[in-house]
Length: 263
Image (cartoon, rainbow, N blue to C red; front, top):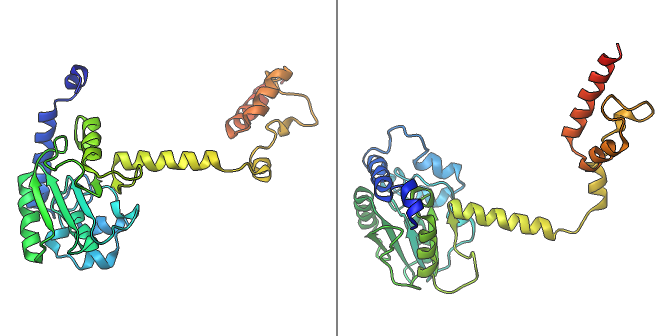
């Protein structure tokens, strides 16, 4: 991390604040927080209700993610999954059900209380393909290239050095197509947004659609003199090229001002 960034955010102070908050979520998940938790949150984020209902309350109640990493693609049996910032293990348990006994899931978290809760739940469920390790997401305790898929749910925005976290995740993931890992985080939002922009740019032009959207903005003035301030043809052409509602509003205001000036 550069010295300039260290001056802006103290990584250890930020980690301690995160630990303090999520220690409380692990111990008292029914308390009211500034974010949603538990089964209502899972339903809000679009998790498969049948999968969530099969999990005990202990596995779901401390869930505090920001999205559904499994909406990107379904995990395949036999895959190895790394859950970065696994918390109480909610996403890790769902991943374990998808990959089956032939697969493996490792969750990494820095909050001891969350780890202990996840480990106790894994024992209660009798899961042998799930393991939870203590560690920082900036320094993942996993060998390079171990994971077929890396999932993350709301932890990237809780760390100071986001670039190092992304580098760590990429290093632990086996080679594959870019953006293949299901991520429900700030990085995932950016990836989906970039993909949407690329799809929009690749879309063939639709003349009918353009005609419907871009009407002449000086239609209010058609058939009568231009309002005050827009008598210059070059200004009218500039507004015509802009073709959006702000131009319409400006034309109406200018017209009213011009009428008042002539009274």
